[in-house]
Length: 180
Image (cartoon, rainbow, N blue to C red; front, side):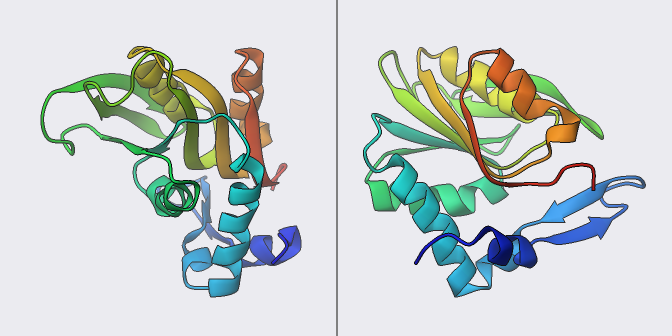
């Protein structure tokens, strides 16, 4: 099944003033209840990365887990979880970052990646880039190389994807919402 940008975008809902006033939240959860949309999204990534030299897929808590887990299974790659502080057992490394509407901290388990690992970093959405830059620091701090950042949605007006590219991190998204 071929990827249909219009169809997938029709599934994404905009929730105004959530999680706080003035934010237009792009909700991808309807994709998960639509088998056709889910198949299109997963297949788009599988086809993009099936011949790449990625060795691992890292994903960010929590919606990023849902597509990345299926993608890791389909591509037969190890999956690395990057979670909110206090959610991972064992020894962890943490990184604080700023959100477009607050502050938070991410963690990864020590030894989750190592030098020579080529990582695809997956999240549901690229906004200001704060979450992704924190995840990149966690992964590269353990020696991994970021091959690409992938997301379902890019919000280019918030500047995150541009900042990533300016930092020499390749970026791929399935759809973008400019100024709306």
